[in-house]
Length: 579
Image 1 (cartoon, rainbow, N blue to C red):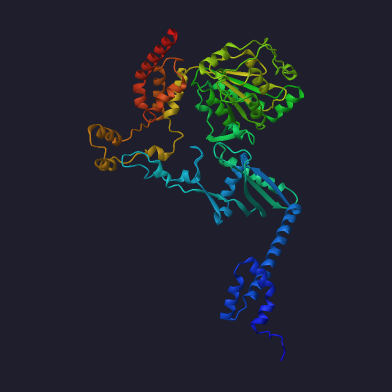
Image 2 (cartoon, one colour):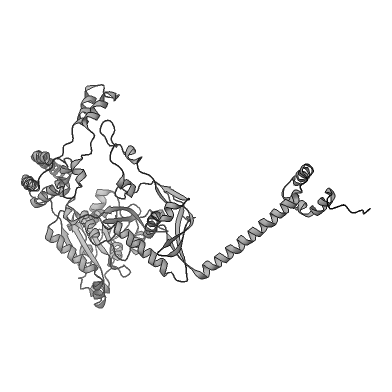
């Protein structure tokens, strides 16, 4: 009889599986005893099954590794890629476009977004949300009730996906990386988009991005983007934040002489034309244009700036020199990160408290300014009276000197091609070096409202030309019967005062609908009740807004409001004189 064990005996099986069993025992404590128990009960050698599984797993990992390396090699040599950073405006445009594609609607991995951005940046769901059943039992609009009908917006989650556009396959990859400098607002990550396609040329991706930009333009063709400086801690990565996207303001809503508005539009239109840049360059003239809007507060200076940006399809970049901590270095960085064409708005430049260093020359007077035919500045003095007065009134001392601002505006290293607009309430308090020709090319005076402007404001406020038919026929209020039936259920309607308050809420809404001819007559009558150039357009508009659907009431109460305002202005004037 042979001394060797048979192949069917346990000893033979142990011998055959000794090597993998030893390996598994080192990896999985207790594997040996468990495998022996299973073998005695079932007669199945677990070691053979595990060994086969390890071989299959190893082969699978090898194939996965080889495929990954092959795909990475393919990407390097046979695919093109364009990356978009989160702080770029194109990022949000691409995300918005992809969110409306078929790939997003059918995807099983999405990200829900319900973050509110702006009152003007409504989604399609918000615009289509029903206005019915959004009032509580007292007829008061309940935002929570209305918002509950709006579903979240869905967009692709982090990771990769594929989509087709015009017969070509593209790969979309959304990733995030930790910021080197964390934001005080809690943002610790930056997002990136990678758009790839097969081929050694990026032209298909560029065409796709151009298509997306045109697509966004068709949606936002009446919107104006408002940008403001990013928080100081985040300017390491980018300089500007897009604060909002507002409907472009029509020029007809700006209270200014129509001929003056036409002249401004024609001047900016000629300046922005591509041929003008070549004309300036051929003659050695700096390609810049500066505008000064000056006049009392509330006369429409900022409104005109927004309207001009909307007409020419430009983004508007607002800078306040009163921002705490804003240094000349920050200001230089902000101006250096401006796009090729835009509107730069420096508001209330007279209140910035600009300091003027003594015994220095105006460093922004350069050969370029001389070539433009601008006259030289007067010798610099120490801190100007306007600067002192601004510092005394605000208690804040600007860290930006006058020469620093002038260098940013038209110094040797300043950028060209943008429209610079400054606004001020007191142009006579500005330093002559700031408003000299070559820096300010066009001055637009704003006055208190004339009678013609008061007439136009009244007519615009109550005209229904721009209203929807539904808004004319269905005022946003609940039926009085429904409101009255719910009054006894209110727990605070237990005394006379509360009952009177609820009674006011149950009154039917007043909505005066006038014929165009009648409205023009009332607008003319309203303008005759107000004195010439005494009230600002903002004051008149504020009075009408309190009666925005009641032109008859506004006309009836105009004289009382006028007398009260005149008395208040006289009292304020005497108080100032007494000081």
